[in-house]
Amino acid sequence: MSIPLTDFRCKVTPEVDALLETMHRTSGRDKSEIARDVLHKWAVTEIHAAMLLHSQLSDKGILRDYEGVVGK
Image (cartoon, rainbow, N blue to C red):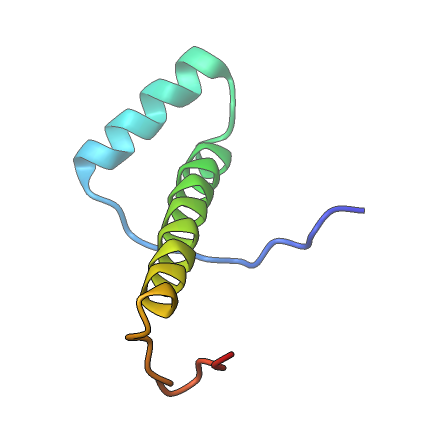
């Protein structure tokens, strides 16, 4: 069972569109699939960085209870 996808639509610059079109033509993959993969990789990287930052701040004893963040 795969995780359901959320519909997201946005306008892109001509440069992004040209790159997506080129990637589509060379790989045969749908442009939306290519864009989704790029966004997913970016999200995973940002989430990992946030987790590392949280851990470092906690280790140094300077982590404050920000709104929406559950402390230890």
